[in-house]
Length: 192
Image 1 (tube, one colour):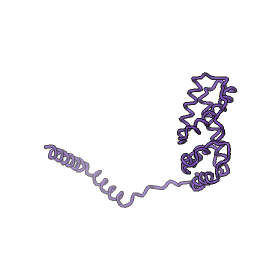
Image 2 (image 1 turned 120 degrees about the horizontal axis):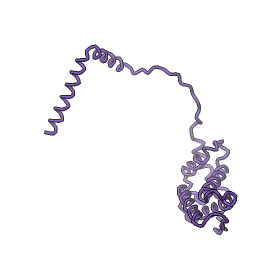
Image 3 (image 1 turned 60 degrees about the vertical axis):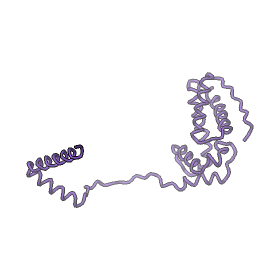
Image 4 (image 1 turned 30 degrees about the vertical axis):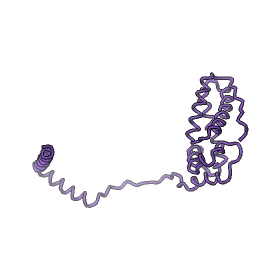
C-alpha cells in the first residue's frame, strides 16, 4: 500500500456534507467486511478525493450521493479487472462480484487488495472466479401449456361425498351440529 497521504480539499459542498459522505462511505466499506481501519480509511479518502473532483462538475448533487456513486464506480472497475471476462451482465456485476469476494474469503484473506490499483494475486482471482463459474445457467424462457389439475383418487372420493351432501342438505347441517357439539363438550371437559 502506498503512503496514506491523500490531498482532499473539496471546492464545493460544506464540511458537514463531506463528513456525512465520509460516514456513509465508512458504512459502505464496512458492509463489505473490511475490518482493517487503515485500508478502509485509505479507500474512503481516495473515494472522497475522486468524489470532490466529480462534485465540482455536479454541485447540485449532494456529496454523499456523489461519494457513493464514485465508490460503486471504483468497485465496478475493480471487478471488471477480475471477473469481467466471464460475460456477466452489467446489472449483475456488483452483486456477483461482492458475492464472489465474500465467498472467496476476500475480507479475511485479501482485504488489502480490495479496490487496490495494483493487480491482485492469482489465488485471489481464481478464488473469486470459482463461485461465478459454478453458478447455474442464465434464466431462460420456457413455455407451459395449461392442463387440468389432477388431485388423484382423494378428489374423486371428496366429490362423491360432496354430491351426497348436496342431495341431502339436512344431513350436512346435522353433521356440522354434531361436530360443533363434540368440540364444545371437549373444551368443557378440559377446562372443568
